[in-house]
Length: 224
Image (cartoon, rainbow, N blue to C red; front, side, top):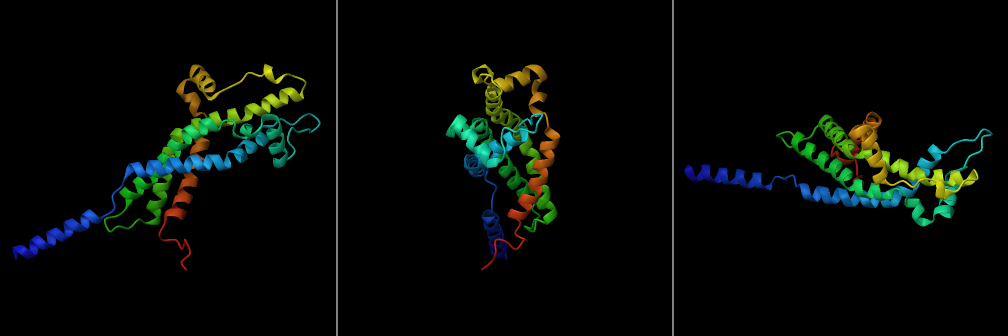
């Protein structure tokens, strides 16, 4: 009898040891690498988007950029290849913790929201994704603020030249100068201007994205 009980306890212990454990470091490394690769691939498109959104329309309807391709061409001609990555430094610096926080937080919440039966209902998957999106805005809000101002600096300099000015007279800005100015004028709150909009974007995206990508209940990837 005692041997049977001991065998059952040993089997249960072995099964418990085989249950997947939440490992933090691999999640952070994977998130960081994914973030850097993503920034490298899509940053020029993001820069063009920002400049098209921020360009000033003249009294007669004249525009600095007529289209996305026109913005690409003019940016490359005036600022060169590396001009397409203006402001990417702050993104590369902050995208690693941002992606790491989001991916790690999602896995963390999924791990702790899983039921004792090992199941994760779709409602809990959505909750895990939303909480992950909530965590990432700690980094994404100041990152977006700094990135957009740095991306738009080239447009401002080009516009000064187009209106007969000198690009050298346009004050050069950096992530450090912007950060120090905001901290000096508005304190730490200045870096989190637009938090509500960023939260709405990131939380809703994470709810849909993680629920769709990570859910074993949905029919993808397609089974052959």
